[in-house]
Image 1 (cartoon, rainbow, N blue to C red):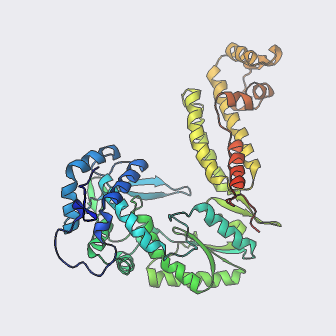
Image 2 (cartoon, rainbow, N blue to C red):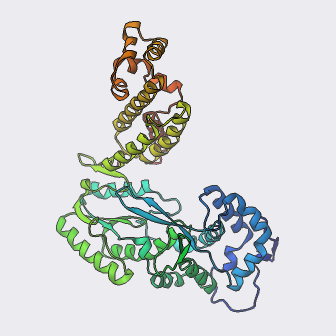
Length: 457
């Protein structure tokens, strides 16, 4: 995309089309429409990819479209006549059951939201609480988990686990826009954001109005969520609580269950009165911190609080790996392994914060056994199995297990198959090891001195 060349410090496409007064000095819509800012936004949208919106336009088609239509789009934005398209509703399953509705904007609206996000983030970022970690520059889920670990290590072993009921579906537009208007002076930006909130959702070809909520799926949604929940952060800070918030997941750490119950009552009242939100009473609880996982991690109590992978997270990863290693899924082994590697390496990169290397070693053993079962079924016939085992260095008498009538899963645990298709065999097949990846990441953290792998004391 090549917007018109800058004129007087701003791109011509973003030049004011009228002489009206847009309020006191501050961030203006023209700042979002600066050439450099637009280029950054376009590169980000293209890099992220994603599914098309209701118009079917892909990210690959966005750049040519902007070349042909940008002057018209820019004029509509500045004059206030631009109308965002409704989002496309997609429902994805939640890990604990049920579905999570996502709203996928068109790629053009994703591009414009990203441009707005890049100029709005610096305004609000300096005001946000240091205890908020979700969807913020230079902050991560790892930092949130480590902060929780420090609170528990300091003796705050009871957690008030706050789960806001359907947060992204129940955000009050008026409450959100009121907080946005305190920092943004240009009414055109406020009008555009309001239109994004009220753009509606296409459900089976029918446009449904959205009178509350901010659709998950657009670049602006995380920032808008943090703007609204910053009030909760300030209230918890004012009360002197130790807490960690990652988007709409918030944990408050206290020393006793009685204190936790008081906090729960106070937060429930604050959310209802100030933010017009409700807690999910089934998922919110006051409990011992080691009983409540946080962002996929659990806490192991001892002389020092250690991090481990939560059981539910392990159950989910095994369920996913089962899909990749189903024996009735006809697929070349090289392709199967490539898919496994892509998934597992990303998963390990996140959960490498856990201080339980044996978990990754056990997962490797389990994956190799499932792959041996796939290979055993591929070989099918007894004489083929016997011949292949011998080619892999198994003695003739042991290779006779190729004629066994035991099932693939049971045979995958047999000594002959473990020797024939052990760790080195799968390494030659280019299967990546979770345990080795885990060790490499931990060593890199220690070498870099970034602190992620160091004990919390």
